[in-house]
Image (cartoon, rainbow, N blue to C red):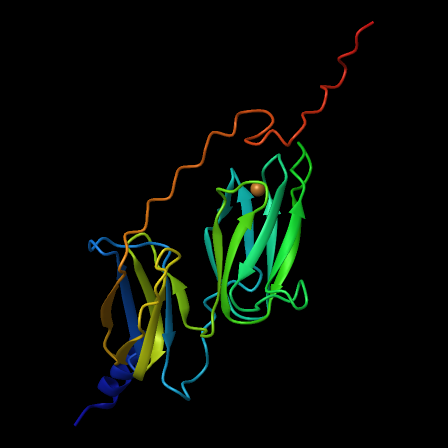
Length: 244
Ligand SMILES: [Cu+2]
């Protein structure tokens, strides 16, 4: 028979550790067994599971910076408006394409296009918004710079995270029961089958292995060149330089 104080202590411990809800950690590995950052892990909890967590930013920003989309992968729920902000001094012409209709920006089309002028010295960066209405994967590119690649993962489960530098996505308080795990990576072109996971009060640790080895992301190029990589930015004449 537990004493009253022991019961209280146990209750406090259970609350502190979330003993009634599971804890799911999924590590994504590449074909060679190395951890994969920037993979997306989606957990589909048991039907009728309680309140959904708030794991995604309500107003995410994707910056165009040094010829890259930062972050390279953004996870949102349907209905989210994503802001594109051009931090470079030259123009970008962002396009978002999806195999399935996900965006309302262009009715009837399965994507969007945003023209963003370069950032002038001392001025705020130019931005434009795109609203994503349905689940799917959006490939981001730039009409002006073919090397620019990014992704927006519009998820159909609130339990969705990107993997960290160790390839791990950590979910707290996943309801106990039979769950499914889906892993997505930009370079995993053949969809991996969903994995069944039994979520328990004790932590569940599992791994999912890709069938590819994602290439290492290139380092940003030096941005010192006036004119930018494409020379589309015409440098203004410095003020006060007159010939008399
Ligand atoms: Cu561009």
